Every structure is written in C-alpha cells, then in structure tokens.
Length: 382
Image (tube, rainbow, N blue to C red):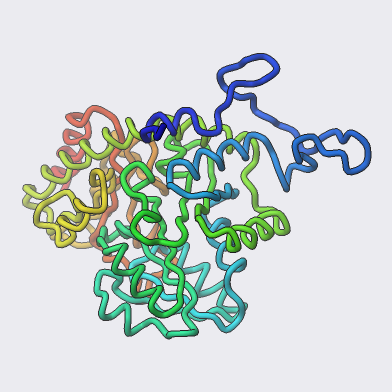
C-alpha cells in the first residue's frame, strides 16, 4: 500500500522500540556500541561517527519523503553540500549555479573549493538558453539549482534544467530547502540529488542545525556515504532526534506557512512604500504558472523591496515586534532578514549581490492578522 506524505512523515523510520514498545523510538545518545566478540557488531553498529540508530531513523524518514533510496544526515546544510561535492567531483571539474544562489553555497564553491581546483560559473537558471551556454560539456559535472531561489524567489523549470544538465553529462543538484519535500520533490522532475538545510523547514523549530543529501543512484550514494564516514560531519543524535520530531509535522506547518505568506504578500503589494513583492503565489510573479505546476503550494518565503531604498528596508527590519530580526528561516516563528548585510553579506560586490532595498521574510505560523498588524506598524515608521 502506498502511503500519503503525512503518513510517511509520521511513520517512516519510526518503528516502536522492540524492548519496551515505546511508540517514539528512544534517543540513542551513545558514541560507541558493545561488540559480541571482536568484529561481532550488533545490527552493524560500531561507532557513532559511522552509524547511530537515531540518525538512521531520520535518514530513512528523509528518503521516504523525497522519494529517494538513500539519504544522509549531516551536521549542517553546508556540511552536506561540501561532502556531496567532494564525493563526486575532482580538481579541475566545473559547477554551474544560479546567479542568486544562497550566499553560503557560493562562498563554499567559489572560495573554499576553488582552492581545491573546482571552477564555477553563475547564471540565471530560469533562462535555459543562458544555462546551456554556461555548461561546458565534459567539464561541468554539477548544475546546482535553487527553486524558489534565495532570496530573489526565482522559479526554474526543474525538468528543463535536468535535461540541459544531462545532455552535457552533468548531474542536477537541487537545493530544496525553501520548498521542503512537502511542497516539491525534485527527484520526480529529473533531478539527480536533493540537498537541504534541515535547520529550516524540515526541523521547523529553530532548535537544531542540520543538513541532508537524498538521491537514488547507488554508486554516488556509496561515495557520499564514504565521505560522511571518513570526514565525519554527521548530525549528532540529539539534533537528529529533534529533526525527526519536527519533520513529522512538516505538512501541516507548510500549509499554514503558505497560507500566511500568501496573505502577507497580498497585503504588502498594496502598500505605497513597497516597490515590489517577490512571491511565486502572486499571479503577477513571472514564475507563478511554473511554480503552480511544480509545487503543491507556494511556501512561506516572501521578499519585498522598498521605494525608499536601503534606509527604508533597514528601518522596517528594525521596527517589527512579532517578526524577529534574525538569520535563518523556516521556523514556526516569523523572522525578518536583511540579506545584503546578513545571509548574503559574503556575496556583496559580486554578481550575486542582493539589492540593498530588499528584505526577506520567513512567514511563520502565528495568527496572520498579528503578522499584518506588525508589518503595518513597522511601515508607518517610514
């Protein structure tokens, strides 16, 4: 029997404890495991860097929700990305990524891995002709896509990007953090690998840092698994347990995030101080129809730019009371971020720089009337 998303979220990897019958599997806060004689491992458990039952449960859950055969849980989203790239690429290989990619991803690829001999090109991923021109057949090994993108909320055609990548012999990696597996499952559209910062919507409560890689290819999974074990940037048991707990309610949370974000976006676009609202749920968004085809709903992220420039954006960001000025996104609480000086400060002065009049809103699951009232009083400070 094929189970629905929410059923899988609650039950995948969550077999009741065989000893006590506890419905919630225990947190295995152990670094090592007793052996029945030298090499006599119990169910394969030897040392916490290699295996842990709590992490294994989360990995099974993640694979089930993204429609993959293999999942790996890491200590952060960037640790997941680093392990993936070093597992599958070699010095001299090339990556094509979006020209508004997350600043931390670009910093990793352009500043850390460049010293290892990895080259890159940034391109507008919603322009398939430009993408094809940027791909170097035989040299480009990974095309790296975010859709919706962070923070410009561009929507790219996953199937078309996958085709362009595969035509050149490259793999398509999709960062699915903004959408979450509840709203979008890139493997079903032809992506080869999905990555997440599980810190965000998957964990959902701003209390556990983590990352994930999900894929179907057995050979690539073996290489990633080796790097996970050999380098050791694994999620700790407590973080894995908290992430599993959060993931069980992902569907109901994303429904509320999406409905609240739609209401906030519609309200913002009617405000005289606002220059533009970037939210794929708005019919005027250039990626609206594509997002509607690829996503179950439009998510909880809204970006907004102000006619008053940098000063207006800063003033609003520092005037809210319900929205908290903070890094990150995807928690139950609403957050406001000034990307130019916060999440994307590392790309200032590059082609990935974020406009200085833009704010990124992570719309939480509070009462939407309170969120709009908070934004209203903040805009009145202008």
